[in-house]
Amino acid sequence: MFLTPMITHAKILLFTVVTLFYSLMNRWGTRLIVMAKKHLKRLYAPKDWMLSKLTGVFAPRPRAGPHKLRECLSLLIIIRNRLKYALNAHEAQMILRQGLVCVDGKPRKDGKYPAGFMDVVEIPKTGDRFRILYDVKGRFVLVRVSEAEAGMKMMKVVNVYTGTGRIPVAVTHDGHRIRYPDPRTGRGDTLLYDVKAKKVTDLIKIGSGKVVMVTGGANRGRIGEIVSIERHPGAFDIARLKDAAGHEFATRASNIFVIGKDMSSVPVTLPKQLGLRKNVIVEREEKLIAAEMHKTIKATGKRKAKA
Image (tube, rainbow, N blue to C red; front, top):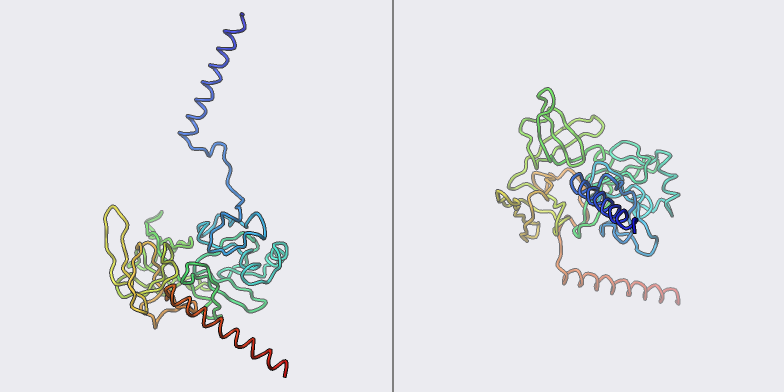
């Protein structure tokens, strides 16, 4: 009977300690006990990676780097799933550890290195060079480029500030920090960057009439000309665009990436659809025509074989 008050006091003390601990967690954040995530289930991987659900449990989670997690492809996926240079992750790692794969001119040996929009993946031993872009359905696509084009990169300016020593600095979408940029440089503009010389060669200002590619939202991958940009203080600015077929659409101004002054002066090779999205009916008709042609060719081949 003397132990009952002691047990009660112990329970009260334990409850007080637990309550204090959780209040500190809520105040300072859960980083006190939660470590960084290093795994990614394949079912929760971004759809634009186009990974099969049945070939494994986990997906290669990109490391922290110049691009966001859901806006990049790890080199392992590029080597194994897209370019088919390897049959499995072990073979892909063997290729990467030899320094045979370069991103923007630098050898990258980590299979989880994040390569994102406008990055150039180069394999000097085979002479293959690919630029990472989006197709009209918003999925990552590797576009083959020439050696001259591989040495040039387009970078979107996401911030401009004055650093230590009153030095102006422009921050780009892939983490570059350009000191002493053109005084006209502002947010949303695009810099043409020479990868080998490591210097900016040209500036494309954002504005009406410029050609852009949408890099976010439901229209990701579409290419169009800026009709107007509506300013909405306290909300998202809206960009009105028009594609090559004359179809108008809108997206957030933060989702557009200027790629040229007009369609004839775009300095990068575009995907085969040229950013022109077709409706569902046209796509279905094209698929049916292609299927009929395939059947005809197959039947013709069988007749020739019998003859």
